[in-house]
Amino acid sequence: MSWRVHLTNQAIQSLHILPGKQTLLAAWTQRDRATYFDLETGVEVGEHTHKAVSRQSDKWVDFIASLVAPNGAFLPYVRTAQIALYTTNDGKLRLYWMTGDELLLELDGKEVKLEHKAKSNLVALGLDRLLGAIAALDSKGKLHIFQQHISVGSFDLKLDLNEDAQPSLAIANGGAAIFVSDGHEIVLTDTSGKVKKRQPVHYFIGRMICSPDGKRLVTSDTETGVIRFYTGDELQPTHQRHALDLLQDAAQLQLIADLPPFNAAPGALAIDDKGNLAFNISGVVCATTLKQLDALPRPQPLL
Image (tube, rainbow, N blue to C red; front, side, top):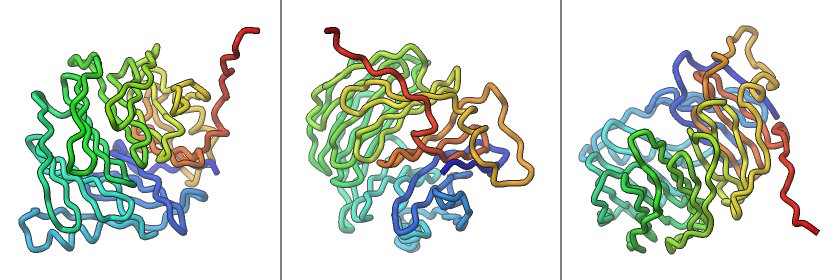
C-alpha cells in the first residue's frame, strides 16, 4: 500500500485513519467537509459535508448523529466556528473545547464542565478515545489531566512555550501514554502526570501524533520535511525519510496531478497500530507504510 492523490489546491486541515470492516482515510479539506478513501487502495468512497448548527438548536442532536464515517466509525475530531469536538471510539463520550477555553464533557447525554485551573490559554488538547482520559496543555507549559470529569491534577512540564513554539499533544488509547512537545523537546508522561522520558530533538517539530496503542510516535520536521518514527516507551528514533521522497514513490491515482513545491513541509499526520501512515503536503494526500521509511541503527550497549 502506497498511493497519493491531488485532492485540492488548498492545504488539508486534518487526516484520520478510521478502522472498521473497511479501513478508511478521512481527509478534511474544510472544517465541515471530509473526503473518504479506502486506506489500502486509495479508491474514493465518498464525501460528506457536516453543516454545523448551534448547540442550543433543536437540530444539534441530528448534527452529532451525522458525524459518522461511511464505515460506521465515529469521527474522532470535528471543528466548527465555535467548538472543537472530540469523540471516543464508541461515540458515548464527547469533549467540547469551547471558545474561551471552556471544556465540557458530555457522557450519556449529560454535560459536565471541567475545572482545569489554567491561568493561561489552552494551546493543545487530547482525548483518550478508549477510556476518556483528557490532557490539556496551557501556554505556560502546564499539563492538566482528567480521568473523564475527575481532575487528576496540573503538572509543570518545564517546556519552553515562547511565541515561536509549536505546541503538540498526543494521547494513546487507555491513557497508556501522553506525549507533549514545545517543538524542540518531546516529553512522555503517564496519566498521573509523572514524567517518564524527555527527548530533546535537533530539529523543529511541526506535527506530532502517536499510534492509538502508544507504541509509536511520529513527528514532522518543518524545515527539511523529514518524517520520523520513535518508540513510544523510550522515544528512541527508529525510522525516517523525507516526506517528498515517500510521496514520489507512491502510486499516483490520477492521470494528471502536480507534485507539491519542493520546500513544502508535511501538514497533517495520521497513523494506526499497524504502521500505516498518512500525511499531506499542501493539497496532496499520501498513504504509505512504515516499511517505506529508512530504518535507523539501534543503539547497542558496549561490551
